Amino acid sequence: MSKRSALVTPVKSIAGLPEPAPATRALDSLLQPVARMMIDHGLQLPSVVELLKGALVHQAVGAFSLEGKQSSDTRIALLTGVHRKDVRRLRDAPVDAAVRTPLMPVAASVVARWISDPRFLNADQSARVLARTPRRGNEGEPDFSALVAEVSRDVGARAVLDELERLGVVELRDEACVALKSAAFVPNEALSESFELLAANVSDHLAGAVRNLSPHPRGPAMLEQSAFSQGLSRAQVELLHQRARALWASVLQQFLRTATVAEQRSASDKGPRHRIRFGVYFYEDLQAPPGAKARPAKVPPKRLPRS
Image (cartoon, rainbow, N blue to C red):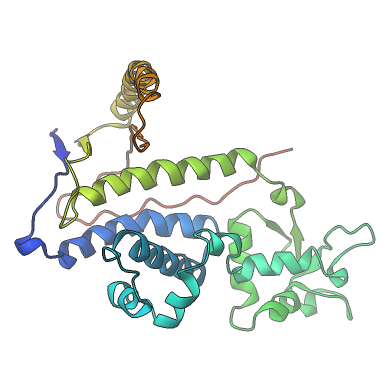
């Protein structure tokens, strides 16, 4: 078993030039869990590309502007690779504009039409159980394949059905009928809060690491340290997880006491205000055999809680 720790510190490249090659390799790893979250929660490439364009433009405007000058659309396009017409559209848009109006993937669009179009509703406005194909239903009645075709002719009905089954949104009855599970559309407030915590925690964690690796770092290195161990059994992983939680609980209590004192002492300071975030994480996965590339863990099909 081997244990190591690592601290990300500022690295000065020759003449302070960017290092695209190692940054690309790092970004490839960072994008793997992002891709997992996209697939888990029905986000498709067009909407995320729009988010990335907006992030690039806002970072270029805010963090890379020339002193005393406003960056032109051409300069922002040069820095980011975003087309000038998109720069012009996005630079003055609210940061969360793309988040408020995401592009709806086909599967979600199918469900949206299913629960809103009178042709696919019962008299009590509940979603009708649909025959999977015309030949499995009664003549003149709507079916699932027709519903999908109305939304998109680029994606087959079987592929949409498989995705909705994976998400736990529909159930297939005797291979003949498709039923919508209404319970799947009850908003999950706890999940929403968890996404907000994910955005805050991981964003600040990554921002600190990125600042440390900037060609022109500002100030001392941010704390960005971790330890890992390998060759572990499942039982030992659980023990280490419990130990990590206990250590965090102790450290958190001490840190919050210190932070309270810091806030009180800062009250009389007339200078600019700063914020901090101090956190910890624990992660485990199957270890790849020597010389093999690690594969993402298989995602189990989602199941709705029983009512």
